[in-house]
Every structure is written in C-alpha cells, then in structure tokens.
Length: 293
Image 1 (cartoon, rainbow, N blue to C red):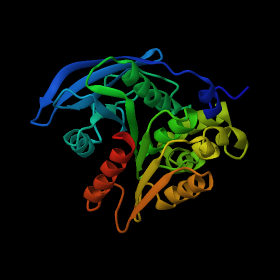
Image 2 (tube, rainbow, N blue to C red):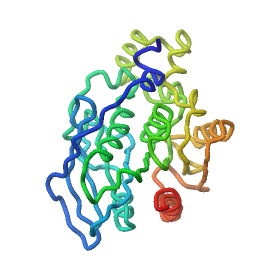
Image 3 (cartoon, rainbow, N blue to C red):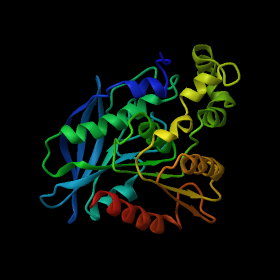
Image 4 (cartoon, rainbow, N blue to C red):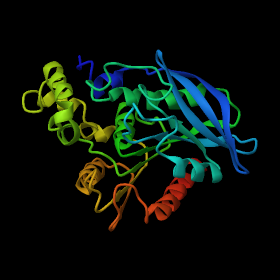
C-alpha cells in the first residue's frame, strides 16, 4: 500500500466535490457578475469567487489555482484579478479557489506538514463540484485548470492523480514538479520555518533519508499518467521560480508523450508584466481549441 501522504494514495481515492453554491453578488459589470462561492471538498467547506459571463450559457469553466500568499493576509479571490476579468469577458466562468486554510475555507492543520497535497484535493473537488452543481450557466463537461506559481504544482498534482479530470491545463511561472526543489528553496533552509522543516523530516524523513517518499509527493515521478493537453508559460528571468524548473518539467512531459505547448518570455520576471497580454491571448486560444469544440 502507498504511503497515505503521497500522490499514489491520492490516485486511489475518490475525492468528493459537491454542493457548489453561488452566494452574495460582489460586483456586476456589463460582461459578467462576480459571486462569492462555496463548495465541499470531502468534509471541508472551501470558499472562493466566480465571475460568470452575462447570458444563459452554459459557459465552460476555468478553475483558478493561485500562488502562495500568506494565509494570514489572504482575502478571497486574491491573486488572479487580471485572469478572472479576461476569462469572464471572453465567455469563460472564472472559478477561483481559495484553498483550505484561506479566507472563508475550513482549516486543515496537517496541510503544511503534508506538503500541501490538500490543495490538489481542493482542485479536484472544485471540478467535481462544478460537474454536479446543476447550475445552468456552468458547463461541467467543459472544464480547465489554470495555476500560477504554487498553483502550478497543484495543477500537476491533480493531473497525475486524476488523469482525464479536465479538458485542458495551463500553468504560469510554476514551482517545480520535484518536491525537493520547493522544500529546499522555501522551507528547509528558511530560519523562519525551521520548526516546520523539523516536523516534516520527523514524520516523513529528509530527502536524503527517505527519497522514495519525496518521489511519491513529486508530480514529475508520474507525468506519464497525464492525458490532458497542457500549456506552460514562464519568464526567463524569474527570480522566484527559476525557469530551469519549468524546463525540467517540459522535458519530462515531452519524454512522457504529453500534449504540451510551452512558451518562454525573454526578460520576463515572475509576475508577467510586459508579457502578460501575449500570454493571455495564447491561453484563450488554447482554451478555445480544447473547450469550445
């Protein structure tokens, strides 16, 4: 049996996503309405927002998975405002997941020590909740994932855990698909997270002492399971998530035969200022190709 904290364990589980509800109207524009939302991920309630285009629909859905923002300061829907607006103006429901331990979502005290694998459960459950929602304007048969930075790893974890979960997947400036890279950059050698690092290694082992466990929480180990078309965007001077990480993921995906479209942006850093408009045009064309047929 696989370690219960691992991607192979998640592969064996039926993640339950249900009870997607549209709550308070947060804003209205000429193109879309912005709602507060909640849904169930197994036994947790997860909050978020949804920008739903005007009209009857049903509209294809893009589930947005944000990058790291300190949960103590995070507010619902934070981190994807440009994408939320652009997607809804172009006929897509932008459904932004807050993740467990964020905003109005329920708490999961083990999430950090288990390398945030719970976020992949939240992403999978969001897709399943869309499919079972019965909300007429949401098309549960046409769904994509879009993840930025840390959200990129959430995308890849979901894709390897549940092949065929969605019709398309996009990442921006993703963290590494090798869990050791992320652990060493942001936890292991950060004095402010020394207690977390000690607990992780006490419960799961260090990368040197327990390489099998670390392989088991790394999506790169299992990319041959991905059946979904993927598009990746990364800037060449990203000083938060080195472009070498996405190049390594690209090479692994291509070797595994994944349908991959890969874009680098010369001189672009982590937040995609100059290159964002071009990247969004490419993203929308990719979504049109895979979700509008």
